[in-house]
Every structure is written in structure tokens, then in C-alpha cells.
Length: 425
Image 1 (cartoon, helix red, strand yellow):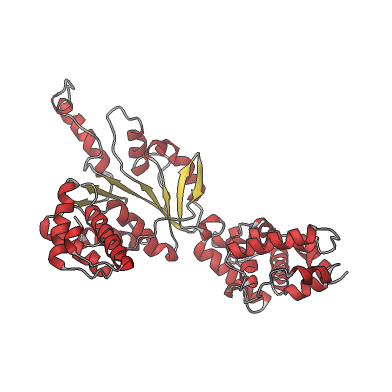
Image 2: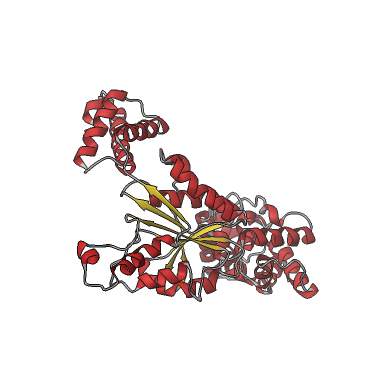
């Protein structure tokens, strides 16, 4: 059995970390090893498929990283136990996991030259000028002795979890399952201007939660376009490296909250369950579901989860004058019922539309952040005209205006034209 055959047999015998064979780079490389003796086009087809997968992972210059990184996210008996806080493992499990690590590290050091040497048609491979890769270095958790690697991997799982919760930061509850978001909104707290007092309340609450201190469910309410949802998403991007994850749950799925709880309650990560644009009609039967979720239901939220909701309504339930003047015998009780839901959020933060000075300050700060070189007077005049045509001032309006200004400035710069502030209306 030559070196390539030994490598194929070793990959085939993976046990604890066998799940990595479902990841694109290890999967296609294993197929390549198995086709090393193929006298037809199978080997060359497998080579092209593997190199394509490697490039998609940005690994043509670091094959070892792409082969070892999947271990950080693999969900198996060892990673699940470590993520759950276990520190003592059965000797047989450690031996099997250590053996897998040694195999994967050995495989990750194979060079294109070594692989071609073990094929049946190296001359044909040379004539085809097959694309090659650079081995590079493995991830830091897979450096050192086997014992050190096991220790570092266990620490990684305890801190970050395993499986999709280690690989992704944002998720959506869809069809009774937690689905990862591959490309979440990348907005950061530094991108949000003004409303520092309101935002600090949400940040302080989140920091307490992340560090294991008591924290409250949070309701961010107020006028449209003031940055409520952006604040929640920016908080995730600020604290995900400290173990924070976010699951967006549609309002109409609130009846399924117990199912969501069952899936995350035993995980080491901290979860914010995000309910965006929350409001109810009186006939809406999900109203009672959320009340039970917030406080008083049998399927209460677990200790590793908080609910952050945004709404344009302080009391969440849409009321009419007939609701207040209706024929309910105990009208006071009805009003209290409509208030009880919002009161179950321990922290309520109000975002209101900015005045003119605050709005223009947001515009100026955004322009400074984007390094836009334009006359301030023209910038502010254009911002006011922009707000008038769009129904009023708001941070969202300011952001949209700055995008328009930047687009015009770049267009003028690329065409060599003269930049004038008054054409940003």
C-alpha cells in the first residue's frame, strides 16, 4: 500500500470526526484520493472538483487550514460533551479523537507533487498542467502534540459551542428548524449615530447577559426609521465573539417557542431571540403565546436566552377608540390587559424621531465617517430637502441621503466632472 492508498484508507477510517467528510474540501479530497488509481478521466475530474472546492473556501494558498478548520465546527460525541461543559472523557473516546486528529493533520500536509507521484499517469498530469495548491499551516487548535490539540479543541467547544452555533452567529426560525444565516447584516455600533443613551441601555443589558449576570428581556419601541432593529443587529456583531448568537423568530411562529427552547436550552452559547416589528390585533391569538413566553408559561425561556423585540407601538396591541369606549363591563380590566404584555419586558427603550438639529448632526457624522468631501451648507440643505420629500426626518432618512450623496460624488469623480453640493436634492 503506497502513501496515497494509506491516506485514503486513513480518511475512510475516521470515527469521532467522521462528520468532516461531509464538508466540501475534505469530501472532495477524499474522493480525489480514492481515484488516484483511476486509469480514465476519473482522477482528473476529481482533481478539478477538489481544487474548485478549495478555491471556494479561499484555501488554494492554505490547504492545511481548509482541512483542519472543519474540526472546529464538527458536531460529534466529543465536541457535544465538551460544549456542554464536560472536562473528563472516557479514555477510549480520547484515544479515538486523538487518532482522528493525527490522521487529519497527516492528510493536510500532502503536497500536489506527492499526490501525483502516487497516480498511475503522472506524465498525463504534467501535460495537463493541473492546478496546484500550497499546504500552509493548520488552524492553531491543531498545532502541538495530540494531547495539546485535544485540550485546545475542548476549550474551543466550551467557549463557542459546536456545529452550526460555532460556525454561524445569526439564525432564523423557519419551518420548525433553526436555519443559519450565511451572510448576516454587518452593521456595527460605530455605524449608528445619535441615540447614545438609548443604545447604552441595550448594550449594558447585553453585556450583563453575556457575562452571566441577571439581564432583562428588552423592548425597543418608537418611531419608524430610528434604528431599533439596527441596534439589535449591531449588538450581535459586537458580541458574537464572546459567545452571543441571535435567532430571529417571526411573530406568527410564537406558538412554536417551546420547540425553540428545547433546541437551545442545553447549549453553552447565549441567545437573543429577536422578534422584529411586533404588534398585535385584539383577535391575534399569538398575543397570549408571547405573554406566556415572557413570564408565566410552563415553557419559559431558558437561562441562556433573552427576548429582544422591536415595535412601533409602546403597548404592542393596536387599539381603537371603540376599544376604550366599548361595551366591556370591566373596561379597566381590558385596558390593563393591553398594557400587561409590554410590562413583561423588564427593559423598555424609546426611540423617537429626531428634531432638526439632531437630524443634521446625524447627517454630518455619517458624512464624516464616509469621508465625503462636500460643502457642509450644501450637505445640510440637501438633507432637509431629502427629508421633506420622504415624509420626515429620521436616521434611516439620513443614511439614505448620505448614500445618494456618496453615489453622486463618486460618479462625478469617475467622470472627471465638477462636484456641486446642490445637485444632491
